[in-house]
Amino acid sequence: MNDKLLELKRKKLQQQILYLRTEFEETTYIFQDCLKEFDVEFRDYFKDKSADKKQKKVTTDSVEFDIPEKDVNTVFKKIAQKTHPDKLINEDTLSSTYKEKVDMYKEALGSVENRDWSRVIEIAMELGIDVSDVKTDDSDYLNESIKALTEKTKELKSTYAWIWYHTEDKDQAKQMILQSLGLNKEK
Image 1 (tube, rainbow, N blue to C red):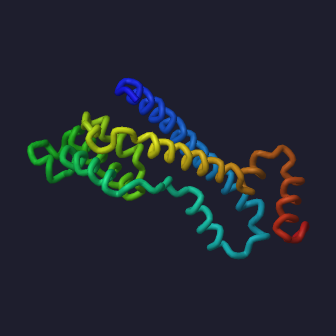
Image 2: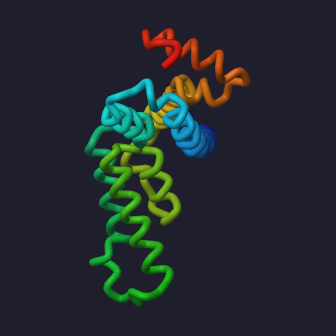
Image 3: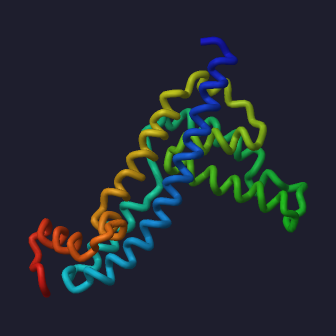
């Protein structure tokens, strides 16, 4: 594949990831409202509140996927050279540039821990770092990001809390949920 076509393909995938990441963030925000109202409405039917809290954490975790550690670490090292607080010795620690770079370092570190290739690459690009020597065609990684973000969004939208919250006839939906969980219809 020629270099220009590969660059355009990567750009398109990056834009798709940015859109899906924003959609996931929006869905998570709405889901929190759904969950609050759902918890109030169904509180009497669920006795084990700790299980609910565990479910909340699981469903709103960041996206993780299997990307070779070597590739992620190579790009992260390049980012750290420009953003690690110890490397910013000559910069004024009170300047907005210093804070911005340190924040980028922290975000890149979190992305590396989650092995979020798309965000690591995005940060590198924002810093003007050339990563072409790491992985020429990273379409598989980017497509994996797209798949993971799509699945996480779909997972939130398929929960009882989401479905109940977005249904016009909440009483009927409540009865159906309780019935599917094998709980008494009236409590």
